[in-house]
View 1: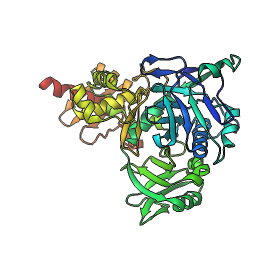
View 2: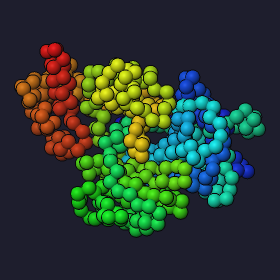
View 3: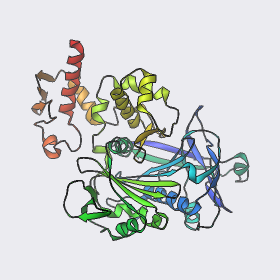
View 4: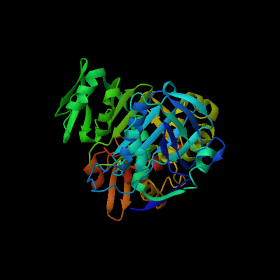
Length: 442
């Protein structure tokens, strides 16, 4: 497994002094283009205690390894913040690649000035974490995302530099999360103390299924209709310190009983955790993006759609389709490719994509998806032979029979996963050739 190296450079460390939280930024993109240290927002957080606790939760996820935990934290990958104009979104991803966290500070929790829109990393250091943990319900909190000149000047030029390895597996996880989330629906909801009792009553280990039963959520040791899979309930641990502020809990899941998402509504904000299907399993191998990436139009469409994005809090597919002059299904495929490049996320509560720019190399889409790269090599080698709704893919290990109808294959990888982790390289190669044949016949 290869890694890219992310270099963080902050003009000064983030700090919380006398109720003023200054988050130092490192690189990123704003409306005007790349910025070394963008400044996005300055103002009051009207709900200081839940905001501080939830931001601490996002930072905790960035430190965590839920599978094979280390005695000491490994490399610290700083959270990402996006200013979409009317809200701030803080995101992080666990070191093990199986938990995604996001805090959405909405307009009801913010009262201040927006200087720009865009995305950057923010420094969350150990002293800042300790200070955030001490904020009480009556404490004031002024938030600055990006340090102004006065703050930088009074920090004695204390430049902070970090170099962090970002494995391909970890990078791919961001893309898989937003694609998987876009296929989820709400499966359950609890309000008030019922949500608190439910979360506190969950087992810490094993795998359970959760389903709505009247006004309650019922936990079962087996799958039932409408249930959501919860593997490793301890991975919801960062929700627990937020329960004293919770207004409701919403549970989301896909139709195939795999990943799940848990959204805690707080005063003026939302905190969301998305979990992989198994405690040991990261999002990077799910393969949810591969079919969309394999389409011939996806790259060109992504270039067009990407130019139309403007750090909107909600990306309207119909409006993008009209502006780009392409059908809505191709816009969705383009958004998938943009997601792989870290340029869009997905908001479950609003059932909509949002624009952001993750701070890593966006030019290696194929390299970050080795299964797709191998499929294209098979196509280039002329290894695919179509036979109606079937195909034969010749490989050094023997011929593989592919069904274009149901996406099955005779390879060992498909028999191990049965489509639960996306198509294998043989199915992808056959679909690429089949699409090209259809286009050629028109």
